[in-house]
Amino acid sequence: MFNDNTAIALCSVTLLLFFVGGITGLLNNPYYLGFVVIIYLLIIVNIFINKQPEVKENETIENDV
Image (cartoon, rainbow, N blue to C red; front, side):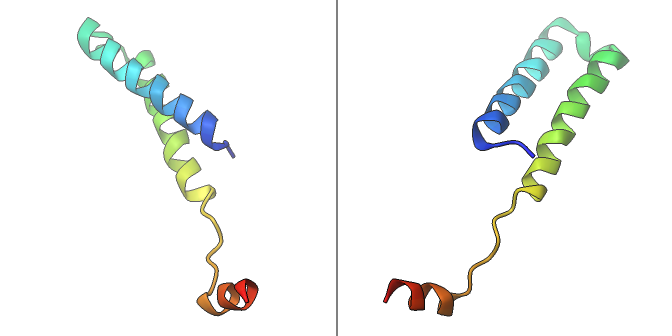
């Protein structure tokens, strides 16, 4: 879904939005809070979608030899 650089950028934006929203009181606004939650959920979904396939130990040993 997102590559590593995009995911890091989205995490930074989400952290900044939480920080600014908490200081200014914008987290009381349902539209602002909804926007922040949607970005947060996209990041969480991205973590589960981009899992690397597991490699068995036998396959790595055979490939290294």
